[in-house]
Amino acid sequence: MSSHKPLENFLPTETFELETGLSLVPRVKLNLTIHRADKSVTPIGDWELKRSLIDYLKTSHSIAVPEEDIIIRKYKDLKKRKREDPVARGNLFVRDLGFLTKMLGFNEESEVKVVEKKFLEWRKGIVERMDGMELNLEGVKFRLSIEVTASDDYEGMRKEWEEISAFGARGYARGDNKQPDTIIVRGVPSRWFAETRVSSKPSMLVTHTIFSAFGNIRNLDVAEDNDISKDDDEDGLDIIAGLQCKIVVRFKDHRNFYNALKILCGRSLKKQGSRLLADYEVTWDKDSFFKNSRSQPAERSRWVPARLGNYSSEDSRRTSQNSWLNPDARRKRFKE
Image (cartoon, rainbow, N blue to C red; front, side, top):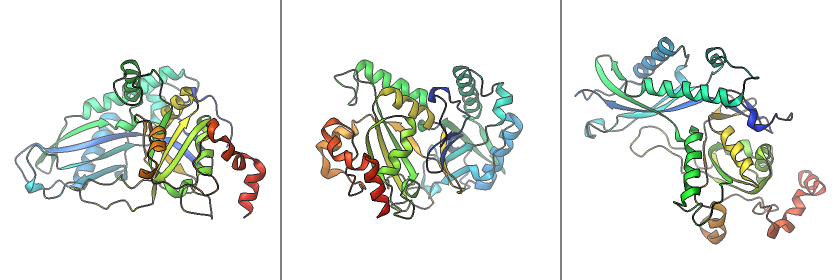
């Protein structure tokens, strides 16, 4: 991987390259919730809804969105649901953001803060104009609610941790003024973080290599992530156990954490040679993950390569790290 420019200088519309053929590609992800707007009990039509949204975005915002980038998940037994309950929910993705360069008047040389402000204002405008829209789908009326997914709301997360740090309102910073240093990424393909031709399970070593692009790592944890699945009341298929993983990364300083979270927000993970885009969830650690994991080891389930142990660069554990951080030791490991 070629060297990056300073992380603080990445625009929200730029792709961020990682190791092992991975990259973080920019996109906008919006949450959709659909309610009835009349007394009809007619089921909502996926195709009609998608076409309505596609046509609206094209004519009103000059945004081209393919059908596959609108995901609709309908609720079961609509006749049994209360009238105020939603009939479906889903996501709308805007993946091709190249048009924003001309529309908002910026380029790679533009000042980052100016571009970020213009980008956020544009996204906010889309949400405000679409939220509360009434959709007439072949004579049946529905009301659309739309919002930016929490995982993409970097400014909202920053405001949250600043308030917690200032007032000590909840567990992470209670009793001290520490700034957060740990991110949590969920819903990424396990095989993309595995050792090629060795295992389909994520490797601590590979994961460490990938996330080191954001800065020095103090602690790292990788585990199966089987909790992200559909609502029990939704139609569709469950996620197969073991296909996705949860990654918790604690950086050595707040600046690395800050840059990592900012770049991970508003992007999808892409693997070279694959058509799949992983629309992961990312947030900051509010619950002192590593502190609690040490005090309650029996409650944790994770994959840890036998020779690596639980990755940590804290002084108390450096001795166990030297064998795999040493280049000679790593060469021996891959020869086996």
